[in-house]
Image (cartoon, rainbow, N blue to C red; front, side, top):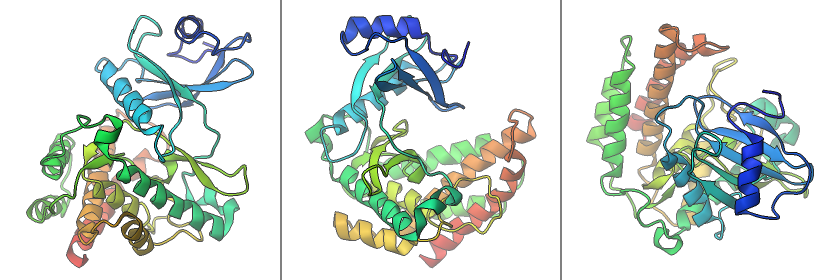
Length: 344
């Protein structure tokens, strides 16, 4: 396939489907596309007819278990949130008929903006704009958690009862599945989280992977506003403070030179965790006194994810730059988790 016809997206069939289902959407120019990101996660393509642009999302190639469920969930949550204050791309169409491009997919508008993945990428913004962008991230999270699920038709989008307990068990199972070495302190951290499980507040729509590189920041009008929150594949109804804990964890500076884990916390002007927590509390009115538990849980979850990547690397199943150094980060994440829980 050429660059204009990336693997996993048959543009002729896509065009036929869009012309049938959304007549007048496409102009007369030929469709071209490029893959925005690849990997094990869902695939994202930017598609254009030469005048307008859209985004197509589909499951990974050769992913036998990729059901329509993922696409339907993502499309459903952005459709529900689009009329609210939460910045999401406008949904165009969901197609669960696998005969069109070989997998279920959905189409949404293309949103202009930059995902900032590293502290280096933030440098050109300077300290003040970096600070404003990260505080804007907190404000958008407050807006998301303020949406009443029943008001947008998402009452059955998840099972909030016992949410934290299930999450902890799920990540414990993930850990058991990727154990290839002794990891000091990880069982202790898992057990301590289980013993100190907080009582969850009222359920909200939870993003599940909320951080700076999952949003697009648009600077075209002179301000750095969050134009869209992306990657809703982990979203559900659950405990909103899990999103806050993850955001706080990503705002802790990791003193690791050339860390293979993306973090923007080292950028000049990046607000520290305490300020993010304070802003979330003030704007949401929520009790955040148990935030250290949620942050420790985020450290645990990331330690398990990284250990899984390291385990696959040791089996020769993962190749590429940086994978050889993932393993040495895991003890650091465990240590942060334990200290966060102990010190509160």
